[in-house]
Length: 145
Length: 125
Image 1: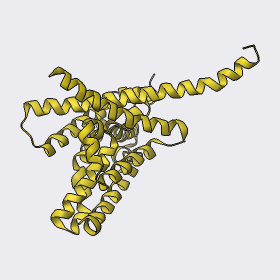
Image 2 (image 1 turned 90 degrees about the horizontal axis):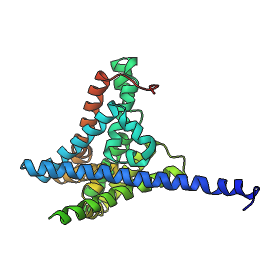
Image 3 (image 1 turned 90 degrees about the vertical axis):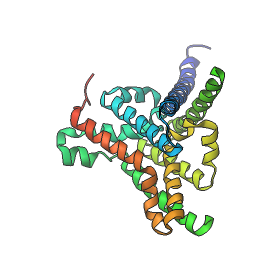
């Protein structure tokens, strides 16, 4: 390889390695967050006698609390810069999207800042989610029975 | 005993990691935004739940399948199914929210509380 072909070589290879790195980060961080969820579930299950529905609801709440708390401390967004989808896709990322929007706009007041801006990212998820559940309900009623 | 736990957690790690990996591949190859990723995975999870397939992923991966936002979609659909079974037509409207009550309410509540307590740290180094 000489002086002329080397820059081309760099151009060709560097974005790819960066992509591989982000993929690895996403996989590891996403996997670890899910393991934290499993650990919380195991611990709650060990000390409290709950039904499966109560258990998963409590585990979800704990994960959302953790996501919100670390967002409020500014740590979750730091993680997000490295982990990409690994921090977005878990439910903690959903909590992050609500809490970070809310905190970002809290100077604009409680009603128009926090409450109105809270849903800039998570709003579509809730709207599509409700639409999805209605479609699912229709499918259940008409097709599955 | 210990190895049982290890295998269980490895499965959780693999499934959860794989779902996030798909998300990262989408980010790398398209101009997809955070909102769209969340919506995409939620709809995908819901679709799998409607088809009756998501429970197999949960059986295998545990929290690896329930913690990602696709698990939220599956919970929405499950809520709708249960409500339709119980209340009929009304369940179509009420089911989703009752299934997702914990997820949505907790996120809004904590978001509200933390936004009242913490100050914005947007341009902080």
